[in-house]
Length: 134
Image (cartoon, rainbow, N blue to C red; front, side, top):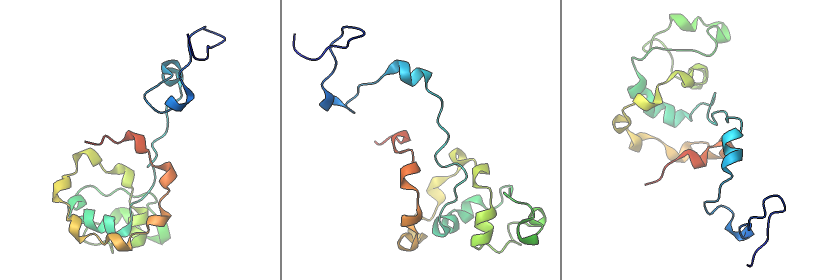
């Protein structure tokens, strides 16, 4: 029988080049500490926030800091807020029920993708393996 054997179990170990090809340590995965959400407490780029404005408009406003900059944020409404980067920064993005957003109503072609600060995104903190690709 070819292949290396584990000293502990005597089982034949998989070829090292098979890494990432569906092999899983089920025991380690079952006993691992749950990971925090990678996108927790982050805010989208201004262009994306502006594209989402019509979708979010009218939903309850939740703020990270209700007194940021000496402003009584809780007295503001969707119509009375100057939707600039300060307001987008203070908006509690984690309060949005993302799974209930009508994504087909977002005007994706109006987002200025070229002006997004793509290099400021923490790409290493994105949970890439959490996505299902069709």
